Amino acid sequence: MAARSNEIGEFMNRTGRRRWLESIGAFFVAGRLPTTSITSPPSELESAGKPLQLADFQPRSMLHVPETKVPRPRYPVIDIHTHLSVTARSDNGVGIGEAMKYFAPVEALLPLMDRKNIRVMVNLTGGAGKGLEEAIRKFQQPYPERFVTFTEPWWERTNQPGYSQFQADEIVRAHEAGARGLKILKTLGLYLREGISKGPLVKIDDRRFDAMWETCGALGMPVAIHVSDPEAFFLPIDRFNERFEELNNHPDWSFYGRDFPSNAELLEARNRVLARHPKTQFIVLHVGNNAENLPYVGECMDRFPNMHVELGARIGELGRQPRMARKFFERYQDRILFGTDAVPHGTDTPQQVFDDELYEIYYRFLETEDEYFDYAPAPVPPQGRWRIYGLGLPDGILKKVYYENAAQLLKVI
Ligand SMILES: [Zn+2]
Image 1 (cartoon, protein in one colour):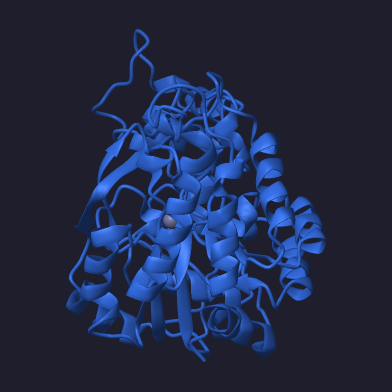
Image 2: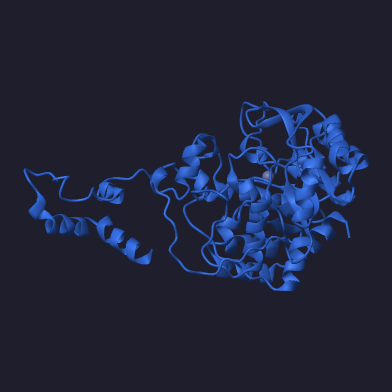
């Protein structure tokens, strides 16, 4: 195999190809190959020297490095970031109404949870009002040891008089119904507008939400908050964009231009919320929504003791900077939670599909020192064309990240 790939490699560059053509020059008659006297050239040759569509480029690593299979994690897991349900209706990215949509029945989830040693799954998008009650009835009520549900704000009422008090009261009601935390989608900051789906964008640190944050703190309900998105989503979708293919496939994920705030403005507004509500615990999802910039996330963690982070859909970022990431885990080991952003539905975003392979990749990343492997089960890395390196975390840190840190926040010990 090695010898053959060397030969092909030789032909893959133009000089090599020219040399090869020269060497068979004797066979040319009127500029074309006599098919009778030479076997047809390998197909690799036909594409040599010609342009190749980026989408067709699927290079296979020739590295001979260990591949460790990690079918089960070393300790039980709480997956703090999953989506088992979602608000059925939305208007321009803003969830509307109480009706919910479900991605899988509870019985379809349990066998995989048992296989992968997932003790608890947290369904963040549990909705509000009657929708929340229904979501709790479907997962948490039949299996209270295995499922936790978070509630969401009533976005559609944010422009009505008295919203602030209404929302605070709704948090109390949700808590009584069994909700254990509040989830904020990137709706806040990027979709929610003064006229709900039109008008100027509502700011993350808008005062009308203060009572909501405070009530969560008073009730011991952590807030799982997603603001902003990868830095590349705020840049033009062009040949310099490291997530070009992903954005090209999902142009609606781009927040470049129009009236969107910059990534930095969104993160600063979030920081003002964290500063203003020190008794409320915030789980800032997707590695503080800035996994590309761990020094900045670290600075925020130092400034805000009420800030926690989770890993969902960001091992692609952490794993391409394994030395920096390992230091981050060592320093903030008490405030990092395991999460995947898994959805038991569809195949559109391979880095989030709820299946065995997804969890095995996370476990491999955290537990082994394997090198240069895929961060998602897909023929082309879906969040950028690179591969990742395992962190090989020690037992003490693994135990905290997999289970203990989340158990403490959710009070499930
Ligand atoms: Zn999510």
